[in-house]
Every structure is written in structure tokens, then in C-alpha cells.
Image (cartoon, rainbow, N blue to C red; front, top):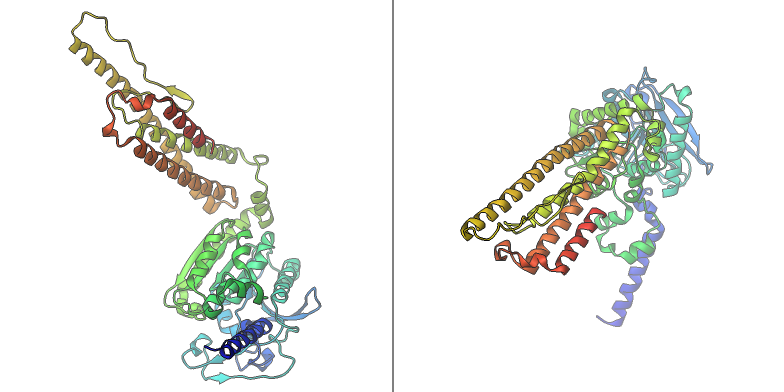
Length: 522
């Protein structure tokens, strides 16, 4: 390849990256080839909720940067006792094209629904006969609109990451602050984000945990940088993503700050967002009080609610019911305050006793594992030289002096052997019985944690359960490493002599004592 070819390739690459840099919003939001710029220009029945037999209120909210966004408020007749869902839709189409799914959500979940039309440009939208089942269309259509004033429905402005975040925050603030006007229970407010809307919901929830009863995420991504590998794999280079990307949508970072309950809905055959990204979000959400996962078999990115059928809506309904119990019993603000500022003050006597019990279980779990390991690594069959501290009680074998001379040596050896065996057997039995007793306490502790972390609004139980699990894993790694080190240095137990001379070396005893102390105070 000559110099001209290399130079041409370089120029083309620079031009291409420049286009990506300046038009990346259009690539994500698909806003040049578009649907009708207003929902009123949509085909029937996608113009307004009334066309799908839903009573609604048209709303226009003004964002902090003075942009008007269009919203639909669709209340239940008993709106006060019903949950309220703020729905953030995916890209490719204004909110009018979500009405068939919204109608199903309204009736199957019995929820009030608040729909937001993002600021900025409308999107490219195309349906063929294969995909028309998603929106129950009877015929194909393809729209172009080249007007300079292109919008998401009737919303103003230009689409951007910060802009969409402001739109979502404005809608939540309106619903939460006007709960009396809307006649809703503001302790039962949920976010539902689908695809791009999931990224919007994650960011909003991470900054408003005290206002939310839960968040539902469907087929959303971890970040724009991670999506580059899927959509534009030839640009999957760190330096390109670092200097070219202006949009980030770092849900993988924001989701770790969400403490309210989470429901993850993922399509088995999602052709746009890789399933592993939803898995990463699920495993990164460690601060939530509890989380649930549901996979829709045979569903693709856009048809989860259609393919999932009744089971899809039932999973959401169960999630709403479980989280509403928490909201009814404790209140959202009180619950989150307990999570952030845990203390024994103000707790019931039963809660205080249970927490002390769990702290004790955590300590004794570590202690018992240490004692079990010491027993397993005591290769000598005839002597029991270790001091075992179990519940602050020390058991140690005592070596009696040899019988007086004059007796038959065989009898002396037999009596001595019997004495050692008896002492070893007694100490080992006490250790085993005590460890079994402690194991029962540990098991009860884990059972308590498993139950209370599921039904209690307090995050304290979840954190204790996670800490015990992590502690158990760390200890087992140390124990296995210690055993491997002893085998490497001294061989297997069968290679020891009767007197076990290796155990008498001062440096070995010092090393063993040091490791024991490290385990106790890690």
C-alpha cells in the first residue's frame, strides 16, 4: 500500500470519526428520518390515549432550562389507592406509538400512568408486516418529515443526554409535588424505563431514592461506550470512545446508588442490547433493598410485552404488590433513612436482639471455621498440642508423666497410648459438639437474614448477609492456602513421624500463630 492510499485512509477515518462526534445524538435518537412531528399527526389509534379508550389529561411541563415537554396523565378511577408509573419509552417513535402497550399496562396492572414525551426531534419509524404485531397495526407505513421544527410529539428543544435527564427529573418532581392535585399516593411512585428509557430511569432513580417505591427496567444498556462494541464494533477502541463520545449514559455507575427495589425484564433474543449488559446491571445493583429478574423467552428487543403475554404482566404485578407492602408499612422516606443511618436507637427490642444475634453469628462463624481448620491441620494422631478457643473456653490436652519404673514397658506404653487417645477423643468430641452447636446458630442466622432481607424494608439485613457471605469466601481461601502451604513444606500427614518433630520448631509455631492472628483480625 502506497503513501497516497495510507493518507486517503487516514483522511477518511478522520472524517468518519468527525461525523460520529458531531452526529452521535442523531445516531442514538434517530432524529433525521422521522415520524410525524406531533402525536396528533400519528395514524389512528396512536394520536392520543382516548383512541384506545383511556381517559387522560394533556400536560405541558417547563424544565429548568425553559423547555416545554408534553406529557399524558392517565389515572385510574381509584387513583388514590393505585400505584403510579412514570413511563420512559424507548427511542424510535414518539410516545403515541406506545399506546397499545400502555393500554395493556393500564388494565392489567391497575396503575396510574404518567407518560413523558422527551424534548427534541422525533425519530425514524418503520413498520412492516412482520413487526406490525408490536403495535397491532393493520397496514405498513413509512414516514418522513423534514420540517426544521421536529419534536418528540409536541415537546420543544433538541435531544441530548442532559436534556432528557432534565425532562425526567421535571416529570418526577411534578408528580411527587402535585400528589394531592393528581389524587395519588406519593409513596407508590414507580419508574418504568424501556431501552433508552431504562437509562433515563436509572439516572433519575439514583438521585431520587426517597421519592420512589421501585424501578422497572426492560432491555436497557450499561453505557453508550459498551453499546459501541455491539453497534459499531470497528470503533471499539478505548481512545476512540474516550475522545469521540460525548454521550455516556453510564447506567452501570448510577445503578449502584439505587436503594429502592428493582425489577429487571430481559428478552431472551434481544438483538440490540446484549443480555450480558442487563446481567451486569443486575449484579452491580448491590445497594437495592431487593431485586428481581425475569427473562421473557423467545422475545426480541421490542416485543417483550407481546411475547411475554400474561406472565409478563404478572411478574410486574407481583413486584408492585410486594413493594407496596413495604411502602404501606413504613413509608418510603422512613425506609431510606433507616438504610442510610442505621443505629439501635429507636429500634424495637426484638430488632435489637436480632441484630445482636447476627453480629454474634458473624463473629462465631469466623471463630468456628478457624477451629475446624486447626483440627484438620493437626496431622499427629497421638498428641493434641493446640489450644482451641471456643466461646472463650480453652481446651488443651495434658500430658501426664510416665508411670514409675519397675513396671513392664509394654504396659507402660499401652497405658500411655490409652491416656493420649482418651484425651484426644475427649477434646475432639467437645470441639465437634461445640462446632455443631455453633453451626446451628450460624444456619439460623443466615435463615433470619434471608427472610428479613426479603420482607424487611431495612437494608441492614441485606448488608449483613452479604458481609457474612463475603467473609466466608475470604476465610475459605485463606484456609485452603494455609493447608496447601503446610503440605508443600512438610508433605502429607503420612510422612510425619510419631513424635511430629516439625511441630516443635519455633519458626513453624511462630508462623502458625501469626496466620491464626491474621485470620482472627482480618
